[in-house]
Every structure is written in C-alpha cells, then in structure tokens.
Image 1: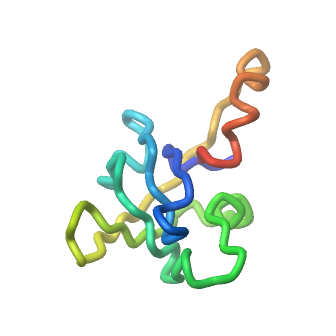
Image 2: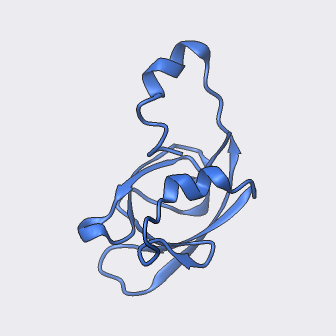
Length: 107
C-alpha cells in the first residue's frame, strides 16, 4: 500500500477534505502539506464537485506513486500545488488491529 502520509476528513459543508494530521517526515510533509489545509483538487479534478467523490477511495485506486493536490491554506483564495511522492505504508501485524479503523481516512 502506498501512503501519502496524512489523515483527512470531509471538509466544512462537504467542500473538499480537511487535512487533520501530517506524518512527520512523510511524503505530505515533504511536499509542504500542513494540518488544517483544505484539499480541493486531486490530480487536477475537483474532490467536491463529483457526486460520491471519495478521496480515500481515489487514492486507494490510483497506483501512480506521484499525486497532485490543490490545497487552500487559511483565508487564501489561491490553491497551493502539492506534489506528493507516495511511499510504502509499513504496518506490523500487532499494529493492524489498532489502525484498521483509521485506514479509510488516513493514507
């Protein structure tokens, strides 16, 4: 499984996905993504306008090691481009049960 090294949840009023945490030293942090960023696009497509859009599912279905996010930070109306090089997610057998509930929202 390839990881982008961040957790997220549905954004306010169903718009985008709010970054809830960024793995220190992980791919998202290296790309400049920060907790509190609002992801609005994924590989050039809006994550809000597509019916049933699910960022976790899109990430899981994409095998490309490089993904691009359009991110709004703070009150800025400009999108920041974050190019994330995904890395393998290492999960040990003992950790599997403790992370299984967060896998769908933390990739």
